[in-house]
Structure formats: C-alpha cells, structure tokens
Length: 261
Image 1 (cartoon, rainbow, N blue to C red):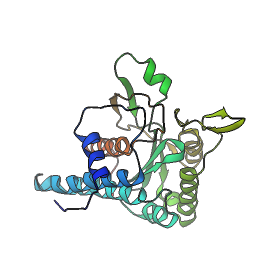
Image 2 (cartoon, rainbow, N blue to C red):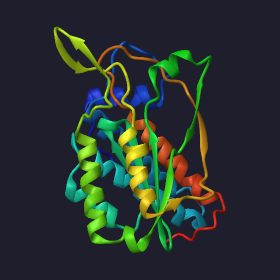
Image 3 (cartoon, rainbow, N blue to C red):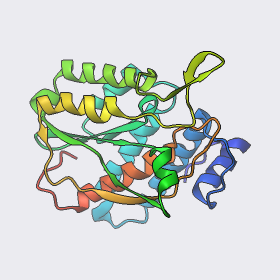
Image 4 (tube, rainbow, N blue to C red):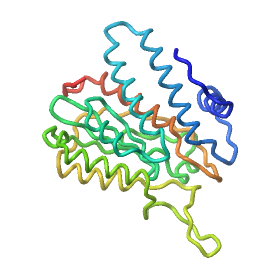
C-alpha cells in the first residue's frame, strides 16, 4: 500500500473514526486536513483491496476506486474548484460531490445512453436522532433522475451544473438553521441544514430535462449518530461509505441499464 505522510492529529482522527467505538465529546474533530487524510487512507485501502479480488472483478472495483478518487479530489479545498468539478462531470466515470453548505451529496452515474443523478442528505436531523429508539434507519439514495446523454453531455449543461454545485457548496442560504445571539442572527451549527436546494430544487430542474429513474437499488443503513452541541461538522466518512456501498449495489442489482465503464 502506498505510504502518505499523516500528522499526529490526522492519525488520531483516522483511528477514532475507522477502528474505535464511537466516543462523543461535545465537539466535532472534523477539519479539512483530517478529512483529506481519511479519504487518502480509504483510497489506499481500495487500491490494496483490488489485489485480493479475482481478475473478473477488477473492472468493477476499478470503477469504484475512480469514484472514490474523484471525491478525494473534490474535497481537497474548503470550497470545490469549478475547473475540477466541470472536468469530472465531463468524464465517463461515476462521481460523487459532497455539497457541504447544503448537507447533501450528489452522485452521477454514467450509462450507455443516459446519466443517473442521485442525491441524499448527509446528516439526519438532530430531532430524529434524539427521538429514535436505538438506531435511526435511513434509506439511500434519495431522489434519482435520469437525463439523456444528448443533454447531459452538452457543454453548456455541464458548465451550468458545475457552477450550480460550486455555489451550493459555498453559499449558506435561507434553509440553514439560525439563532439569535447578542441581537444578531448567526448560523446554528448544532442543527443540520435541510438539503432542499439539492434534493428538491436540483431534482426538479433535472426532472424537467429527464425522467424519474426506474429500479434504482436502494440501501438501508442503521445510523448510530448522536448530537454534538458544539462546532458540529459534516462527516466525510458517511459520504465515502454510502457512495461505495451504493456503487457496489448498483452493479450487483442486475439493473437493465448498460454501463459505459
């Protein structure tokens, strides 16, 4: 497995989030550097895992690895790069974008004559987490829309989609939870943002260009989240895990679509 330098903070973060049972201080340990370190470890493990697979599974896993690599590239900075996102959209590989300001992720999957757009909420509502008896059961992905490649591969479409995703990743909009503090309105970091601009607005725009996807494989996960009351951030490991699990489920489902990769 390739070796990458990881500082003490990043190493502790990886150990805590991969190997250890959940231990909750009332603050998040998520930082951009830690998320990049964790993403790199996942990439290294995915690369090593390929060597353990039979040869007939290499192409499937290579596509999965490329998707994880695309996600790693897109989260390297505090906001996504327009050039990087547009380049990924124009590529033939599956890709996943973490839209941080909207608490959402967008997944693009390329098929023979169409592109499948999926989206989902990353972190559940604190009220749902606290109100659940035991684990919270969530279904992924959320809305799924197919768009013909005659539209999805158009340069103007990809440029506008990339610009939309960049803005949504950066801009804190009216759906973000706020509170009054010292006669000022400030963002409420202890609550989660409703992903309306991704799961509803973007979905509605794409629905006007395509159609609701049929036979989309869905996975159900038992979420063991707890509520942090100070400086809570979105967990990149949730996006990594869901994207990988969903990708494998898509290829194992026997869906009628033919893949381009």
